[in-house]
Picture (cartoon, rainbow, N blue to C red):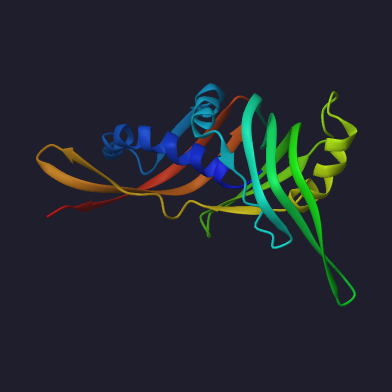
Amino acid sequence: MNTLFFRNCIVLCLAALMLYAARCLASTDYVTITLPEKVIRQTIQSTLPLHIDPKNDLLQGNLVLDSIDRFELGENSAQVQGLILGEKLVLKTRIGDQDFRLKVGEVRLPLTCNFTFRFDPQEKNLYITPHIADPVKGASQEQINKVLPVLALLNNREYPVSLSSLQAIQTKIGQRQLSVAMEPVDIQVSQSQLVLKMVPKLSKIK
């Protein structure tokens, strides 16, 4: 799993809601947007198949999240059950002063992954940690043996998702043409919903 998975989800949902939020700025210092679990799932579905970047020099090849069968939000967590596909996978390792390449080849494996979240308001980063469960029943032992070393490179590592570069939008309030950028100040994940609190940054367009 990689950070694009949730960055795409957040950015696509925000793009649809920022214009509405911009029209409500006069009465509040920040904007609160609640994204229901169903909306997030639909947004994720629209990005599939999704390339997985392990951000690790030890893994080469193509790895994708092909589909999801289950998506559930919990307290500061999310559970995703999906199908992982891989091709031309190669694991690199070093023993002593010798480099070795292990050809994994193709993999096709359904699995469950639990994500936990931590938002840093100073860095404007959402940190995501995947906790990959054992492969689901029905997977062949051959596929499990192939993919477990790959998953070990992705598992239990904290990945930053930068939210500081969310694109500004243009809107018109009265006769004024404005550019509206949203600065995230808090992100809360709870049962069946994700809540974002953002401070609007307004500037006039000449």
